[in-house]
Length: 254
Image (cartoon, rainbow, N blue to C red):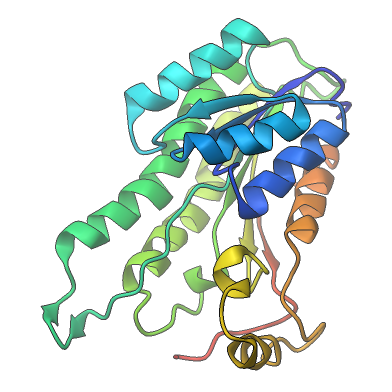
């Protein structure tokens, strides 16, 4: 897909994989809207790429609708939507202070799973009204972010793994349903990626974690996530699938 002057949006674009993905899309000529709950972080990314910074809570219908309308008013409906927004608090089902806090569990599901679906449904409705871009009838692509924790959730990750497992399960039915509009749906399931959360850990902890990756024995780079997103955008036969980006790691129980 030639992204020159095409609208694109990235949720969670204020930092980490989202910010790098936004810069990649800009480098390919797209007009990029950066959505984040932290609007200052969104502005920082947007300033680097002449983009549009928007404050949005992905789990809130009105918030996403308002942000999407601003994109439409400025550039038109997005042809590419990449969902990177998410949270990953850790809590045991039964811990020292009692059972897992239900509000925390619901918050993780609302942001990671409901938020991903919210962005998908609203972007798909807008994309479906656009003219096709290719001979096969492609109108756009939606790329979601899961995690290897969807498959090998560790102790303390019940909420996070549940939310990312939901994103994995959403991929195929969404791709099948939206195929009639020429809209593809893909998901990336990253492993240990060198985002600020990991890179702020002590060096000995970082080295221990990185050594668990069979090859290459290091953290993945946010740029490698963005490179995969870029390839998904270009390859029309990639649809309805989840791609692990993890160096063959399989997480231990803890």
